[in-house]
Image (cartoon, rainbow, N blue to C red; front, side):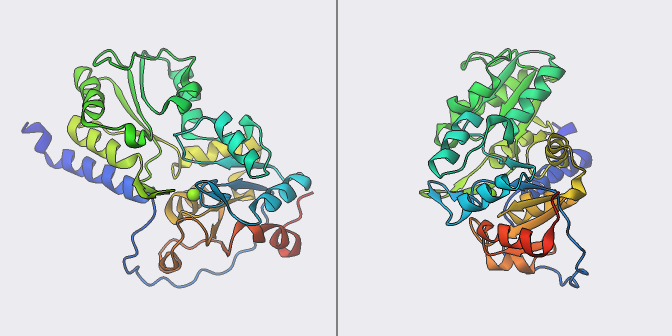
Length: 307
Ligand SMILES: [Mg+2]
């Protein structure tokens, strides 16, 4: 116990909390005054679309989003859809986009679950305990998954958005898996604190990961936004260098701050979880758009030569 109370332990835990904060919507606390950055020319060759809050809000399409996506596709601009959603498989997301008039292939969607599945196939040190919804579990189907009642034997404990499937027994089972094997890795599918669900604001992944990190003394490996590795993986898929890519998102820290830290350009849209105080934050978007619907006109007018 004494060991757990060392300065290093608490410093590490504080970092975990800080990282959780850094991956979700900022509080509207007064931000330090920052001088406006010199406007730098933006000449992106590719686009990353965040999904929830940019293309739709839960089950409601954002006006003009489908037209904007179709325009980008008609111009053959390299693009991907990048989301921290872990409650659905990429096949589900393809179907969801289709209901809003947008076409995408599974390979054009990057999710933390898809990214972690790729990594687990190469790391491959043992059994996987997956705390994800059944629809997202399909992405992990070819991995050695532990049964849902296992309390030991995991090399990896993967925490996604279980939503209202979380209860004490389930959270405690994740803790027991970590506690029983000191080498088991705690893996977070994103570190978003909360999101805007159809029925109102709702806890996302980070609060549960932080609880498990606190209880187990384990530092999580984070897959998803705003992790730089996630954005770099997207750039590799587009075969572009990060500076040639424009990320479009409604989350100032996960989308804009994360993308900029990885060397991408970033546009903040005033839809989804956007709040006016986001514009007073120390993170400064390269562009601010009323919505993604403004993208084609902007791209055509002064932004970019794509060919
Ligand atoms: Mg979003």
